[in-house]
Length: 94
Figure (tube, helix red, strand yellow):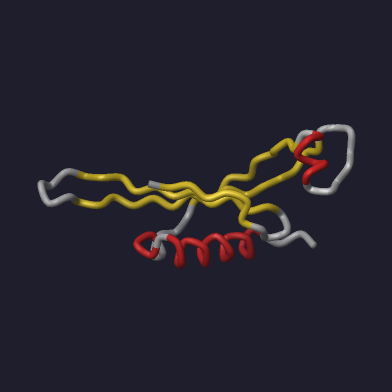
């Protein structure tokens, strides 16, 4: 079942709310990317295809600027990658 971008965004927001609550109020930017799963990774996933498998994922980027005690501006960025089925496949941030 493929989810809409709005549904995928809500999944990313729920993940950020739990993982990085300081970014929960930020509206993410959205980017769709094509990823390739090679045959070794496909075998681990139980797909068993001898070819590379193309997959679309949505990447949601949350950004915020924090101000340090000395007045320095510190960018805070988190990215949440969600596949078409709504599974968070990767999350990164500082």
